[in-house]
Length: 129
Image (cartoon, rainbow, N blue to C red; front, top):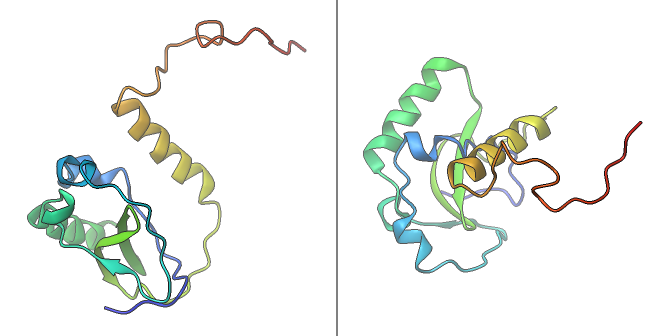
């Protein structure tokens, strides 16, 4: 599939655990890749994803809400997509949803301890007003 230079799509990084990304295959060869006129494709299995679970995710996404398109990008390569991913969509207020998903992933990977205090994190300056 070909894509426009900057397609605006919704990404669902939190679906990775639920729909089959193990990360094992991808961790051995992470390379910086940036999209150009065409996005590089990779087979889901080669990236550590389950094609069967991605098909389930596609079915589920069509049932929960009408989505213009879904595109799953891992390390600069398209793992899966459905819908018209070249269609430019106006996105509003995506920051909170994206940050929430990224923080959830970091918590699941034990990179963030939600119970840690600022003192435990080494902060010596606290602004009290």
